[in-house]
Image (cartoon, rainbow, N blue to C red; front, side):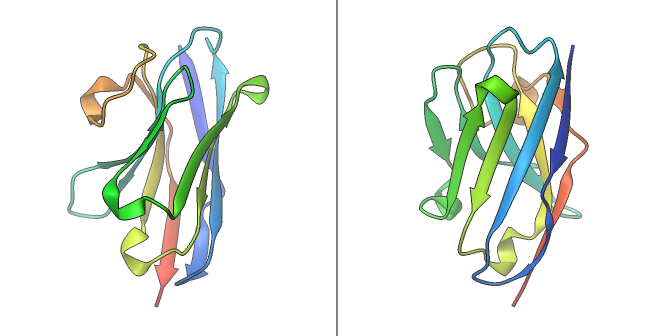
Length: 123
């Protein structure tokens, strides 16, 4: 079992930056893809970015060049650096982990989820 806790959300103006963190505890010895998803009220949760067990990264088109995903394996922490934020980035952001090391951008693939951290970007 893996327990995930997100932090770092908040309110910023458009063009600003935030850094999200996801602390993992529990069975963190096994490798697994980790990802960020986000969700706004009334919409389905959407994939934002992921990083494989070997460090390969991928991003949804709308955040490419603005968001950077990384992980600190020694601290069992997943990070998401978000720059040049836009109002449309406003959402609850969730950290997720899969049992498998490869990544896919589908919610059902991920086995463990955090409770989320809210990001609000004002224009």
